[in-house]
Image (cartoon, rainbow, N blue to C red; front, side, top):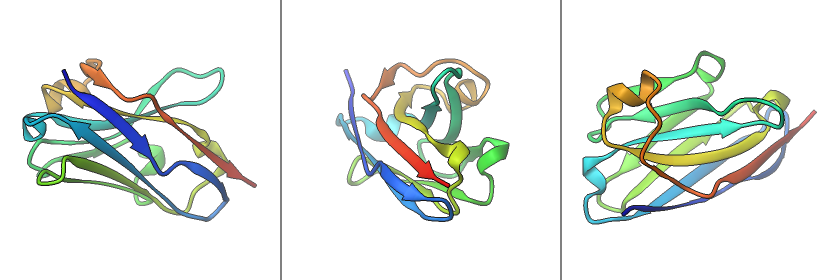
Length: 124
């Protein structure tokens, strides 16, 4: 069992930045690929970004490329999502997730473990 706790969400003006953090309670954190998903009201959940267990491979959905950066610290069991140049359309609940396979995750397989989510609101 892996428990994930997100933090760092909040209200920010367009053009601003936020850094989301996700702490995992597991001794085998480095065994998991990690992902950040988001769900806006009335929309389907979407994969925003993912990172392989080593950090050597990363994925970004097109709408956030060049603005968001995912990273992880396996010694601290933390994954981050640095979000810059935020836009109102980035407003959503952001979820951290742990998956057993990086490639399967970016191909659409739902991760096994999920956090509770953190709200990000970008005002225009």
